[in-house]
Length: 178
Image (cartoon, rainbow, N blue to C red; front, side, top):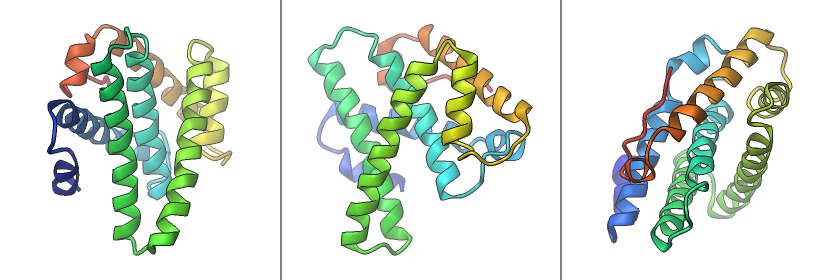
């Protein structure tokens, strides 16, 4: 994965920074706590949702900055890194060219829907829990404390990201709490 994404992002500093940030996001999304303690399904869908959750937190933080040309480019490249990774993953799993396009389109719709749902729900723990139950857990029966723990994690990280400068985030120096 990393080699393929590095090739994609070899042409500009901003693209490389977006790649580094995306790598940090994916690294955090692979934390076993999501799958072992908080019962996120350890599957393609569950991993997708953990990446999306972290990507949404970072994008939400960056969107609070002045929309400089560099920031807009970085956000665009960060989103492109995500979609390039999803495309690559689907191809590795054997999806055909036509199948990949259809599936990536569905993933894009899911991503933007979740981004809106999480953005609208931040600050309202009940709404955030409902959004997580609907999206991450896909309305499966899971203990309420798992959903509550994931919601609290999102809140902690939204606060932690607020404390980090946009420049650091854009360099991929993203700190997440556990």
